[in-house]
Length: 405
Ligand SMILES: Cc1cc2nc3c(=O)[nH]c(=O)nc-3n(C[C@H](O)[C@H](O)[C@H](O)COP(=O)(O)OP(=O)(O)OC[C@H]3O[C@@H](n4cnc5c(N)ncnc54)[C@H](O)[C@@H]3O)c2cc1C
Image 1 (spheres, rainbow, N blue to C red):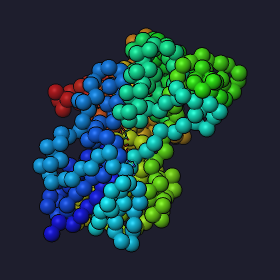
Image 2: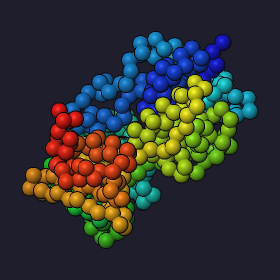
Image 3: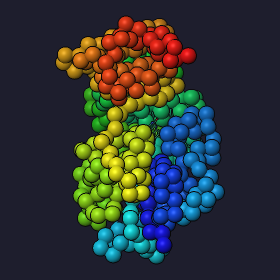
Image 4: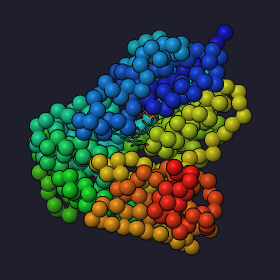
């Protein structure tokens, strides 16, 4: 008899886990996926393209219904898992009967943070996390009234780009003195800012939101320094919080995320967590690639194979507001490291490679990012770059002509 394995959350990590499980242990588990969103798992990353009008919402589904059916997976969408009974090995589902599990996987993702400022509860304040949010933002974009986006990280920039592309006047507020400060050094961030401004987005740095104004509805935003920006809507894109409530109420060990060991197991035997809700060695990753690496390890572990997850080398490799942005490793450059920099603001490109102990330890690319994965492989390989040091700045085709061909 197949063992009941229940996955809570029908997002990107869950879909990849089922994919990996179907390669490693088909038939061993009877898999059920419980997701509260009203549709099959979709590629959340592509919500930015949907908002920018580059992709239709129905095109972002990760797998069709037949794919899940062919693998014998029961998918319940529009269903909220409300309680875990660890002792009885049961999962309660709101408004439905409980289901039994022998193994449980929490893949509950994150929730967009709402700033705790006066006015945050006004009508016209939104977030950018799921397809429901995108529908709201698309309706907003169609009205072409001024919008303030709070947060100059990836999500805020994507929200601002999508709205601006639709002709909405957008002001982007960022608390720090540079955009994407967790991924970019100061020159790269300055270049990105100018490229974003060329798309018609107004960017205000060192912008600390004091309150959102309005009588019932948003009318504007006031900053701590007294500046005031008129707006009919506000989008919070200032961070995410892992969804840990289910785990916490069940008595599992929770810090910022659900604490997991190198097998992705939580503090309870046979209960696992992966993706954005999980915290491994003190880190909650907010990106897809680590979730996929975790899915591979967890599937192997559930198949009884010896394996462990050592953590991920985080890299950012994406288009931000239509601009290629890549960042990985120690992109600032720790003491004792050296940096090779190539900067051409007119062409909209910036490239910085950080070298320490003869190895590539970090990189930032803006504009031209076609060699990003080559640099990432080098950072991960931790091998000497002495032989290609002179040419590596100019890309793979010049540094390794034979291999690149
Ligand atoms: C607009 C946008 C753009 C992004 N762009 C990038 C990018 O370019 N690159 C990148 O690496 N990452 C990007 N990300 C982040 C990426 O989407 C996430 O890292 C990834 O989706 C995490 O997968 P997950 O399965 O852990 O969580 P999710 O995909 O969020 O899935 C979790 C699911 O669990 C459901 N759930 C939660 N609690 C329950 C419950 N109690 N019962 C039932 N269901 C529940 C949630 O509703 C959700 O459907 C982006 C995110 C957004 C929002």
